[in-house]
Image 1 (cartoon, rainbow, N blue to C red):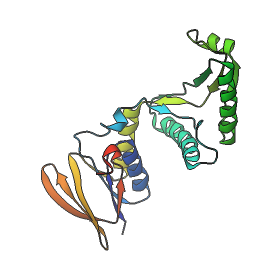
Image 2 (image 1 turned 135 degrees about the vertical axis):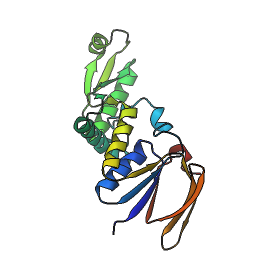
Image 3 (image 1 turned 180 degrees about the vertical axis):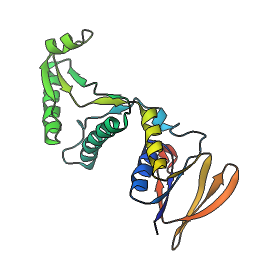
Image 4 (image 1 turned 120 degrees about the horizontal axis):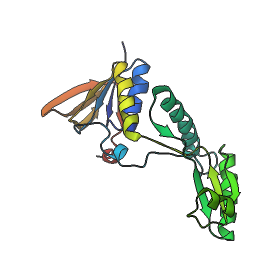
Amino acid sequence: MSKSVIIIGAGVVGLACGKELSEKGFEVFIAEQEKNIATHTSARNSGVIHAGIYYPVESLKAKLCILGKQLLYEYCEEFEVPYSRTKKMIVATTNEETQILLKLKETALKNGVKLEFISGDDAIDRETNLFAVSALVSPTTGIVDASKLAFSLQHQAEINGANLALETKVTKITQDSKILVSGISGGEEFETEFDFVINAAGHGAHK
C-alpha cells in the first residue's frame, strides 16, 4: 500500500515536491488556499536561476544552489519551459572593488562555479551604459518563466496521480500513529489522516 502525503502550498516548491513524490509512488494531495496555483512568492520574483556564486565554500546553500541550477536547466529543456541563459556581469567601479571580485571569483571556483574576469573596457563593450574598471561574467546565471514552470510541475504531478485541491486551507495538524490534518476546503470542513506532511506554504509556513 502506498504512503500518503499532504503538501501544503501549491507554489513552485510544493508542486515540485508533488511531482517527485508522485513519480515515486506516493499518494499525493496538494492543498492550496488560493483559487489558483503559484500566486504568492512564486508569482512575485524575477525568476532568476542563480549560479551559486556568493555562498560559503562547501556550504549546503552552495551545493543545493548549484545542483538545483543544473536540474532546473535540464527540466526546462525536457518539458519545454521557457528559460534563457542570460549570463550576468558583476561590476567593480574602483580598484579596491576589483580585489573583492578576485576573492569572489576564487570562492565561486572552490564551489565549482567558473567565472570569467574581464577588464573594464571589455565590460563596457558588452554593456555601453556601464562604468567599470573590471567585471566578472557568470555564464550559468539565467532566468526562467516561473509561472509556466509552476504549471508544468502541476501537470507532471497530476499525470502521476497527484490530487490538487484549490481553496483548501489547513488549520490544524496533530500527530499520533498517523498525522491528522484538519482544515476547510471549498467552504466545507475536512479532517483526514496522512503518513507525511510537507509544509511548503512559503511566507505562511510558520502559521
